[in-house]
Image 1 (cartoon, rainbow, N blue to C red):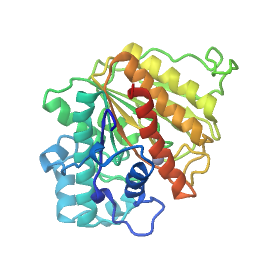
Image 2 (tube, protein in one colour):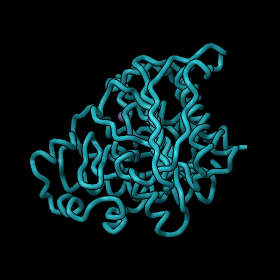
Image 3 (cartoon, rainbow, N blue to C red):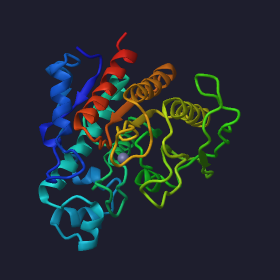
Image 4 (cartoon, rainbow, N blue to C red):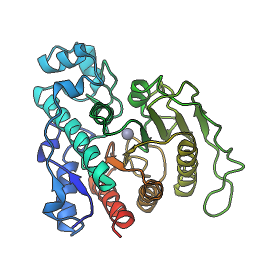
Length: 335
Ligand SMILES: [Zn+2]
């Protein structure tokens, strides 16, 4: 039995038909975790849908109303890049409920993983890029409303920048210090790491600190500032990526003390991803997960995990990458 909970429902499935987003990945991850003996049935807990009240902690009443009544404009539907349906809305409300439940379990057990969620391209008043509502932001605001946390940090390792996250938590930032330059930073082999553009956003003291590591030359075109953005060049590999992640985590945690880390463990920095242009290997992605978990554990900060994107040419690779996130958590938190 795992020392933490996995949040999952068969109803995480997104009814979007034939699509580059492999909506069946959630069930396949669940089934593989069981078949491989990584998890047992008792490790899973089932979420309930978020309430409209929860969703309105992040989203505008007008947008929630449009989603509930099917009155999005044609342009708003197009922007989602997934076909609108009432069933789709239900699946997203359930994903948000799953992230709330995972945050709650993480606060009890040190870590929890939702086998879903990570819809970081949703904004308060609209959705885009396969993301209808922002489950992670909703979970953070719900935990704060219930007085279970005061501060949170998002660590977004999806290959695409967390534009919705940055927009939602804009104006809640802390003063930033510069990241080490590429010349002074070194990868594990001791050689200088490949330069990346880093952007630090200064502002007044706030309650949510956002970190995004992503490919610069990729969607979204407009990248609103996170507290820390690492704009990575195309084709960056394992060692450089891990060095930049290490830098970003160290820098973020020097300036901000979160009560909860929300880790978006996107599978799309993978070298064979159809929508990504980075070159991480399966092993590199697992090391990435281990790094986040080790840092969180060493500092005693609970970490809630969502899966976010993953569009590998072979769906089984995406499934493997997400399963490895559970394995990494088991290895770091297991003993
Ligand atoms: Zn992505």
